[in-house]
Image 1 (cartoon, rainbow, N blue to C red):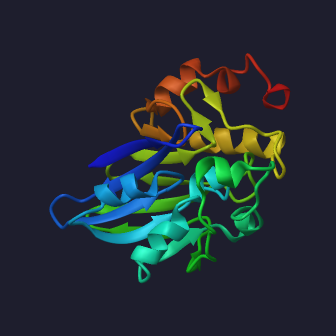
Image 2: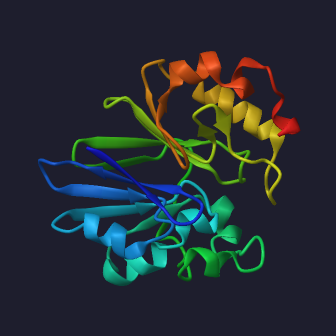
Amino acid sequence: MIKVLTVGPLAENTVLIIDENSGEAAVIDPGAEGERILKQLENLNLRYIIATHGHLDHVGQVGFLKERYPGVPFLISEKDLYLINNDIFPGFAQMIGAYPCPEPDKAIKEGDRIDFGRFSLSVMETPGHTPGSVCLYDEKNSFVITGDTLFKGSIGRVDLPGGDPAQMENSLKKLMELPDDTDVVPGHGETTKIGIERKTNPYITGNFRVDLW
């Protein structure tokens, strides 16, 4: 089961992946409303805390969760470590109620696998929004967690520090190699499918260039 909790003033999607048989779970991008996230984890065996990238609206509650689950590893790309306590603009951390983010227990990279319950998440490096952005693809269960790389009908910003339009174009091409029926769970907005985005997303069909957004 996948639960999407839309949290905080930027309507960020915190994703819970839960194996209902074993009770094992992972939480991805815990950005805001830590108590609400914690309530969803009751009676579950939390195995991982994962961030698709280092922006505060995606890691703002990692510290909160680590206080309560100190033995659960926090995973993120080392390329985004410079962002995990970076306000980006004054007052951002206060606005979303961010906790100080700890160093990761493990840095993840292309090709790593994160296994728990019946899930096996393959790490895809997809820079462009940030240098260390990753997507998490489960081939067997046919879904991909895209963070702020790919949205329904849009993509993540490339004009923030560390953003790179050329890298974003390459990352989008990489995601478009996934099967059409792959469910896309983005960092903001509604879920979609790879096939739908291939046909309708203007940043993929070529109606807009990435570097103009």
